[in-house]
Amino acid sequence: FNEAIELYSEGIALHETAVLYANRSMAQAKLESYGLAIADAGLALEIDPNYVKAYYRRASGNFALGKYKLALKDFRHVCKLEPKDKQARMRLKECDKAAKAQSFAEAIESEETAPFVLDV
Image (cartoon, rainbow, N blue to C red; front, side, top):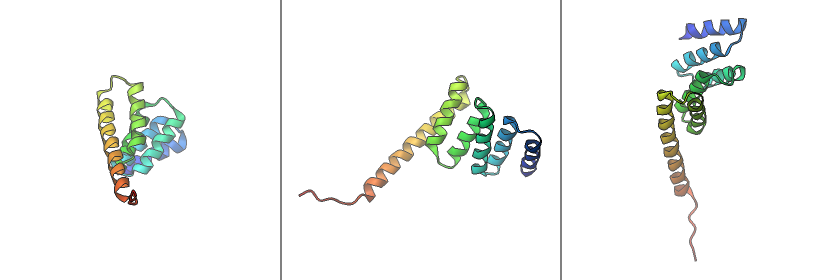
């Protein structure tokens, strides 16, 4: 995937396209460079705000980093643009479940670490 990233980068240097950025995003994700994958997907969306694959790749990167609320936003957008995409709907449900679990865990943690107040 390193070679693919180099080749996509060369292509981008010659002519920036949403497809090249989105493809480089996928290669970055395969190497678990999720921050770079998210950045490339964002650049693809700057060029083409309706490019479904870029939303999907940015969502997948955010999901991998545990940023479920950001991922949810993009997965919802994918489902809006491609309502018949079963894979996207499945990932949306998976992400929604993870976001709820994360919110629940954060709520419990904040209750456990909150200062004890004695009612008199």
